[in-house]
Length: 200
View 1 (cartoon, rainbow, N blue to C red):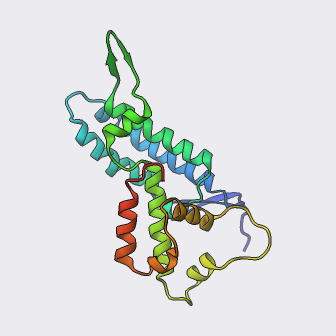
View 2 (spheres, rainbow, N blue to C red):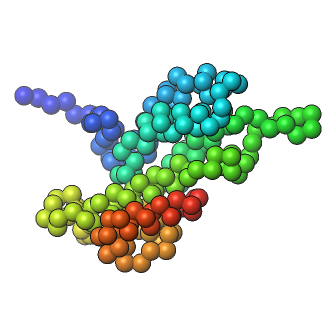
View 3 (spheres, rainbow, N blue to C red):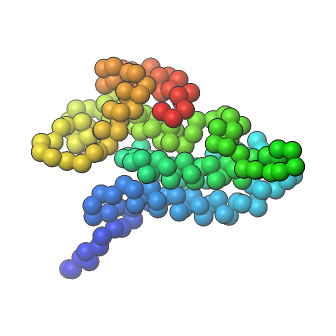
């Protein structure tokens, strides 16, 4: 039996590439979320629908499409930029233009997030990643997933998932995070409080 050699393929909804390029997977998810957005755009721009319900539509029908599998992502600065641009596009559609005197303009980023009053997309992904890291720490030591994730490989390597986790842990000011993550409820409470740190 012959197997075709490919550079990428979809497995359980996740794009796997030969060079383990997470950015390709993130761009794939943004494309899928964009399709969901354009399918709902008439609702999001409808004048007779309250903004509160439009936000609920975004959070329940668009955002989950984008964030599927986000626990395993390695975020580059470019990825964070693309994710932020995508979310603000939707928020600008929901909240519309603002009138200043006789002219209309798009809302600034800080104005959008002040109205949205929710954790921004990139911070949400980082919190999700930390939640998954806590789950791994609480696994039995003999499980392959835990061994592969927490062991330190020898030799040179590029920036990986655990590097992102360590940066996020530093951002929220948590020492001995693996010990704290052993307490599931305490870890989740800590991450809930970290959601207020927009731009985590």
